[in-house]
Image (cartoon, rainbow, N blue to C red):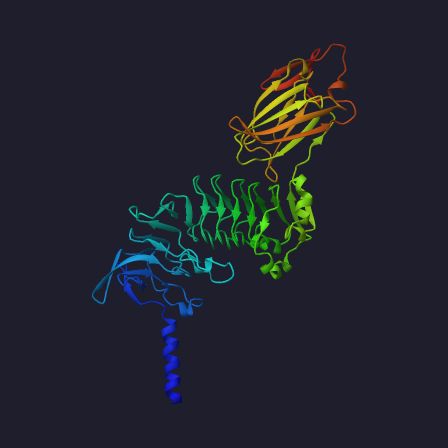
Length: 475
């Protein structure tokens, strides 16, 4: 009797290790494992051996660099149509397989299943894949691919990014409104990710374990960030756009590292959901070494909000206005929806005495200076950018310097972000230049200085000498 029980246990273990119904070699000689679906006529690609999946490479013996899934398979004198991709069917795929080709008959792909408390992507068909490219048949009615990336047919949802792709920069096209569940999970090489303005949601685990990513900007269009979507352990700079309303508890994953800066541009602190159920997870966060930058008017709200109130350093996001004797460096926070910006400078608090108007394009480059009649400055201001091709940016700021202002003078400004002709946000402020004597006032001579423009530069002529706006004589 004991012997029979022992044999039965062995039989059960052997059956549990084989997670597929049958294997059939494709035209390349790769034996692909399938499960028969409930209708009895269609099949799904599955894992070769789920019983030991953490110890084996999936399809380890396949030597070709392209894995082609056929439309139809004949097994035991019956023809089946391949319609699905099962949970984890490409996990730990042999890394020699660079390309996956899928047939038009595929209409069911497992992208997530609940395998724990709000934990999904472990069940994704593509979780842990090492493909460099995914190619779907053009006539598939439900899915499509472009540049090796899998989308829904209308390309509104990015479903799967090939984790073995060698590119370190990824630009997701406009029109994508959602990163699907586990869409970029395990992607190995991405250091820079450009998200489109059309994006509204980052699905659960969409960027989970993209540990090469160090700098991420989530633009103002995104409203929801799914649980564990940002579980990237090497991020040192994270910006949450002004539209974000909720984030998953994974928001804290990068904070297990030192020297992390997080910029939340949302006026209202985003809700951090599943916070209570994951409280122990937060115990390793460096709450005293992480800088959380938020809008100045929202400091108290963040300092009191659940989750956010754990952090010691909650600081205003607004950049400083730095003044000199006759100059000012002004910076503003980039608005990702803006097509241009306008700066209007006044000499009075009521904004009736306009001094000048500066216009900029969406990249922060100066496009125009409008001097204001009788209120125009005595010396034409010069606007300096450190790099004409790439304007100075730090923490998503644009920055410029105006010289030629009057010393010991208070100025008032209005900064507007425009989308077309519509004002989409506005900032009012003031600054005062420092007391003292400007460089131009120190120029000796009896004749009055006059301004000239030479090769696009504003210069000061006095007698037979020529000076820069800073008072340096040009020989």
